[in-house]
Amino acid sequence: MRKIKNLLVVVTLCSILFACADSKSFIIDGKRVEVEPYGWADQETKHDSVIYGVCVGNVVWSCIGFQNIVTPVVLTGWYLWEPRMLVRDKK
Image 1 (cartoon, rainbow, N blue to C red):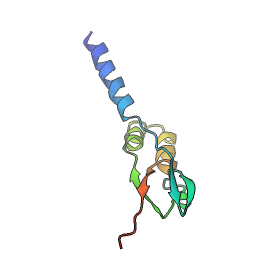
Image 2: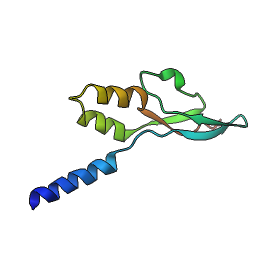
Image 3: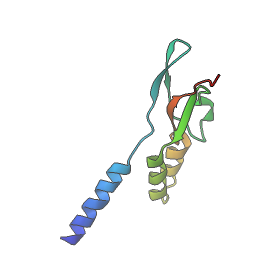
């Protein structure tokens, strides 16, 4: 019975931490722009008008799946940084 409870706790925690980086829509220069997440492998998709934040769920899953080289490469290479908000000029 205790093993089942422990398994349920682990599964629940993993499902809470499971977070894929999500794209967001912003209005930049009067146009709606869909801003995609980026990582170290595709830094050219970074938009200068957007503040990005680290997707902690992808970092955790990369640490959990480090035995399989594909998991950390994909999660940090293309989905490490997700768009949070627009940069506001402070004048």
